[in-house]
Length: 436
Image 1 (tube, rainbow, N blue to C red):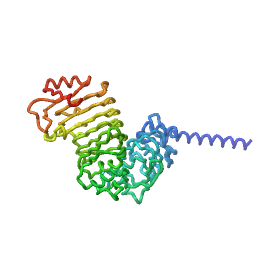
Image 2: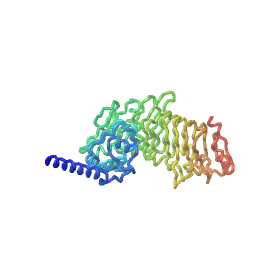
Image 3: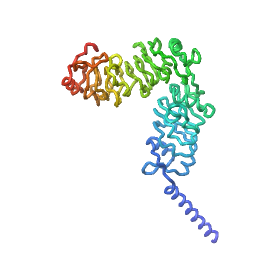
Image 4: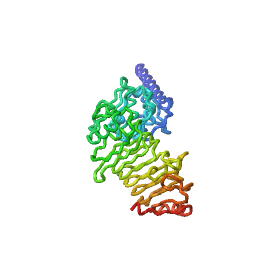
């Protein structure tokens, strides 16, 4: 009997201790103040991590002691909140859907990051300072990159050179196998390679390879009419920080051409591509000298954000040949926006044609223009914002017009107010016969 009572008391005490432990887990652990990406939160919940009713991560022992996470194939677009895991050292993020990857979302002690299969990444943030001199993610000892990281010519190469002896950097090949990262890039096509080698020898380490960390010292333009379907290599030239000049690359319309990712450098003044797809998009954010943008017959492009620097404050720079936004024949393009400017507001020509999928067009920042072309643009477009107030008029050759006139070729049901405004303030010159 005494043994039975002792056993009963022991059972009661155990239940009391267990009950206290459970109560502590629920109420006494802190919650993370970091905002979590919704999809990441759902994935972590399925893996057994706990969140409060407000969506805050409960920092229990499971969170505090987690050193490794497999978050591959989860369709993640953001890892915001992951830095709430203080002991996390190894994270597998392969085969997700990132377009921007921010290393600041990782905990300070992160050692290994795997990103194979994320070929949609176009920007790597907070890995190294923008001037390439200060490593921001110093704890990394193993970085596994997707195949398309080879197009990144600023962040990844700078990090690689700064951390050569501290971090093993590998990159997926076309077959998905990791190989050692290198800053040397081959130019496969012999015709293109020969052209680039003649015009930009300063970045070649041999007659076959470009070193993406070298700066271009020549002052040559990049003008190339392709006779091959492989344009690989031009991306390394037009994105090079040392490039200064015009970019004009054309393909034969009957063939298929592709430039995987396009990011013109600050020295590009004219950027023109014709009959060339850009499956990873077009980033003009660094093109701080851009004055002419021409994109024709690009079936993969979906978004164009034009920097405000394309607008002029000097009338002598407003010739319709030297000051222009021309976008046509882009069957998948959905949005075009011209960023507002605190400086110039003049441009020679605005040209938008054969854009059946366009749902948003905003060029309202323009206040002075010589020619506007708008034809065969999606009649059901959701929003179209054209100049609402013209403060001056141009003659198309780089001078102010002595008379109030504007050249128009417009055929769209949703711009009647713009047409009416132009009739009230200027003489309209019909230039439709030029664009049939």
